[in-house]
Length: 98
Image (cartoon, rainbow, N blue to C red; front, side, top):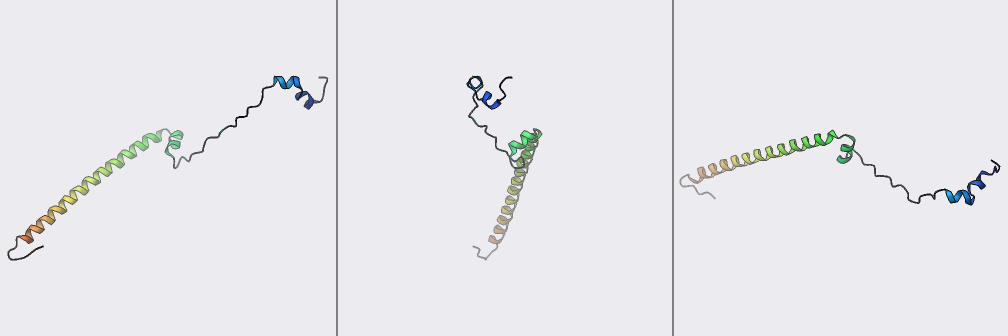
């Protein structure tokens, strides 16, 4: 190497015409998602979580349906009890009920 001035050598027209131009596009970093709150991020880290979530949702739906059926039964029992009480008081002779 005859020329020791490296900066002048790198910036010369001969070298710069061969070197690729730098890209002006900046890299976009993805948003960091919290796996505790975001289910999709948790599934990306642990694919088994999708199965667990499906099972939990099924159990929740079953519990909700069971509770609704129990509420319906208890409302029906209360209605029958009130109806019997009303007819018992209404059928008493000589008493006015409203």
